[in-house]
Length: 255
Image (cartoon, rainbow, N blue to C red; front, side, top):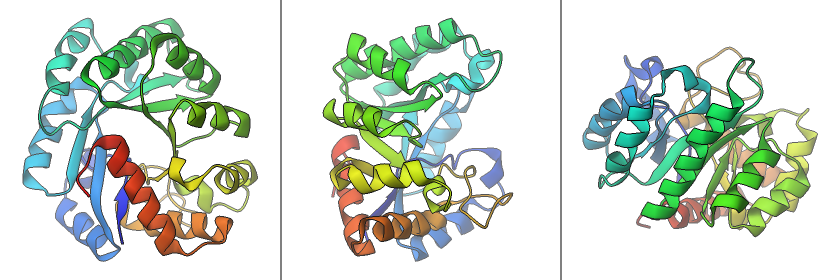
């Protein structure tokens, strides 16, 4: 299978003690490649080292909006050099989070606009975090694009999904799709063409249904693929193959 985990944070401390075993379990489940977006500048060097050590690691460099207090103007000045590195396949994780209290929305937008500009300049995809902020993300992409990318852990409406895919953006589908109560997300997965979907775990976060409170990991991506296949009424192999092709195309990965 051509399963690609299009969004996982394998560089964080949760995997420090057993990363080789985690990767082995992923391989056994058919997940052989991993898009690993950074969350702050402090983690960029470690992420780059992991990409050297582990085949299938594909880093993205950016500044996650939830970690706003850690980001400095100097980080933004340094980011272009990191985006030019040969291992870098995307810009992110970046975006807007209007769910977490006390995150400065204006500062978030300043940083996000710079990520959009840099993505256009270096011709790389954006990996976008958009929580309670999908409409504003769409507005900023229209104002400062054109760019391409993925809305990670998509949680917007069907109409917003249609707007984003019309702009060429993909939608990241992860653990939430495995929950029976996720009726709106299931309707979106059923309606949006498969060529606009990516599979992700967001490991170690967003565990699958029935595994609440446990650490998520890329081997669980098979459950996301199974859920998408069931919703669409197609073989899981088709979901794995097409979403893998989608990731290869978006991030410029070799087939």
